[in-house]
Image 1 (cartoon, rainbow, N blue to C red):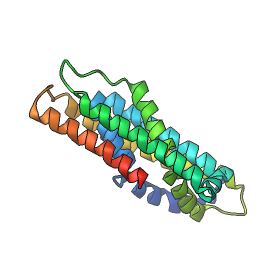
Image 2 (image 1 turned 90 degrees about the horizontal axis):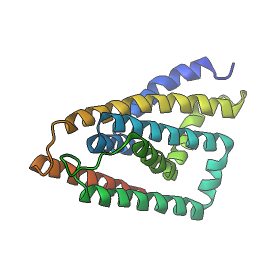
Image 3 (image 1 turned 90 degrees about the vertical axis):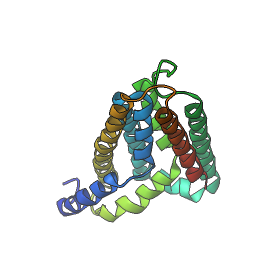
Image 4 (image 1 turned 45 degrees about the horizontal axis):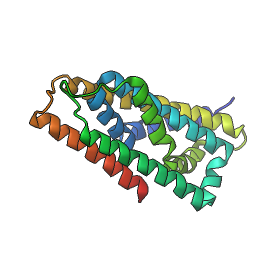
Length: 202
């Protein structure tokens, strides 16, 4: 038995509750759906989920504890992620999200940005280190348990965030470039990315 079935049953509803709670990942996928449509929303969600699995793997291998023990490494990653989000905020502010002047956000780019945003957020790996061990049976191999729980969290997040991105993508179809609504949503997306940058920085 790789995972204690009782602990697994206890983990599923808690993990689902975390997935449906609005957070930075969900807001990021919402913004990407608005910028590029439903496919980009799903792609961003996939990138975020992949980044989450990398964090889970690192935590399972014990590298998360190393990052926590070296504040310098933590700060380098954190500021790198904040700078990347600030750059996305600036690009979003300057670029229409609808109309003939709007460049199409391709799914591959949305997935890459989702992965980078998540992988440069060291707070996620600290969250994994604080949350997942509560469901780990120390008498069983630790790394496989981390990976199973991480896969469940990432799958749930992929579905929930993807649906949010799809909803945003459907909203985008009704937008027209240069309108008050388009500008308001563009500014809202830029503010969102900027807010995520500030949140990560502090």
